[in-house]
Length: 350
Image (cartoon, rainbow, N blue to C red; front, top):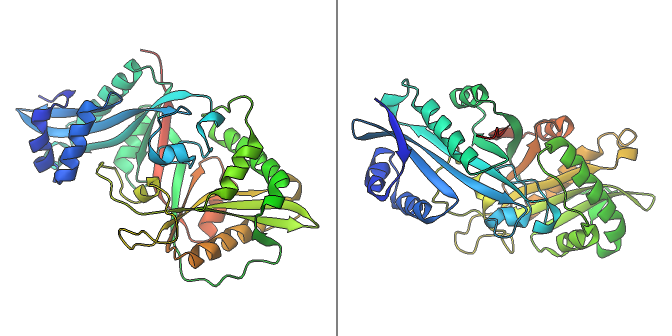
């Protein structure tokens, strides 16, 4: 008979051996036992561990958010790409980081038991919704999540970048401080548009958009390219450099985890010597010119790839809300593929 329960410190040796993890993962489990907002539940049969589920609660829009979330990038966990804790009204949601079942137990509904335990635990923690991440090709996990009310929210796109020469379109150039008034308005419009696509966050009142934009312009790891026509900005692309790094936490899919790490000052990692990962934060074209300037989004995208290539970047990523069909088409047209899918469901009070 399969039973489920919270993990304890006595499970760590078997978890490490049974699931073929290393010592860094053992340390990760130990840290989970001490963290008030993270949990692991295990499935057990006849004294042997059959699987586990890894979950946590995220307080989005509040101080104390971990690592990259505080930097304002749309994370793999579906955090909207807003900069600064003061832009988003605080919400509390659960994230299912991993569900794993050992091969001999995979046809005994162990994953279903673990998922239901996880949902119940996160409901008891008063979360407003629950999210889960997985590989788009993991049909079994996708079907399981759909059966429990989860629907796709966003996808992480990834592409490899060939060496490209810097040859921006004559109407596309790096943003400057002189662009601040117009760029601020474009960024405000873009965030409001993303809010419509996402449907899972609300902006805080009294947002200082000019200050937010100026912080972006001064960030040494950010480059904003703007499109201009007759002295008016018509669009922009926001580019980020993110350094690769080690991560002790398990994941349903390793691809894309690197972009949750700290930003790299410069174009190479001083410790590993690996090139940075390029992340496309935004691509936006002004609504009034969207129909008359066909292909401007693609031109901005290509200019962004050229800038990344000049920084030594060889891999580029970006997270797109599922409802943003135009952006998905642009990413796919230029050779990106989906490597990670975020699912979400609203929580029903227990």
